[in-house]
Image 1 (cartoon, protein in one colour):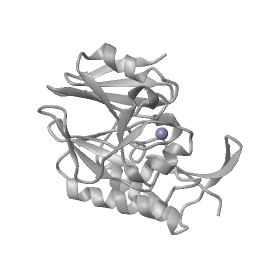
Image 2: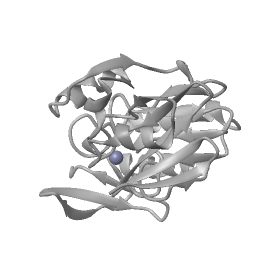
Image 3: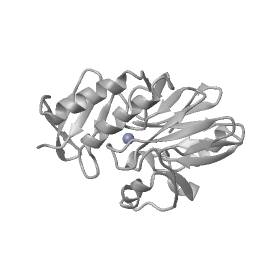
Image 4: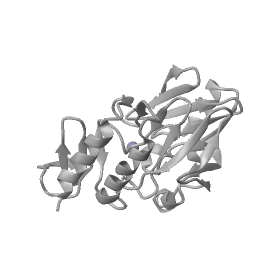
Length: 229
Ligand SMILES: [Zn+2]
């Protein structure tokens, strides 16, 4: 059962257990950001909120963000995410979006920002007029998955550093997991934490995650789940 919470006059969050989706509306159309982990009916949920045509964009293609993709037939996704998506046996047409593209929902421009690292085709969305950055899994105060195929902590650092070019253009970050909103100063904290891990200056605790033995680097602001060396 998904819980729907209106955040402001043109934004809703749809809580789907451990993950959330966002529904953004403009004057012409609506955009659902991600399609959940247990919500094959994500399209229907969104269409019950708005009368506008609802399109779908995926911040990335990890299994907890794509459950309802098929119902859309086509969806916006970074082309570098296709491997991660198809690998899960998922179907549908990818409409590629990448750095610098602007999707306009009607008086609501959304700028696409490439954020490779968590996955190769992870993207952020700058909701320009609302001064919000939607960061997917890359910016949050929960546990960021950095183990397994396709993850790259070095690229993750570069991506977050690149966000300094957008400084002053957003006041808050909407996250897919844990706290709904985190402050922009979370970004330098995450960069510092990731750098400490890469430099071998942080201590990870070995934990079991779905049968995988991984290292949890828990900082006071967030955690990173990394492969054992
Ligand atoms: Zn996720």
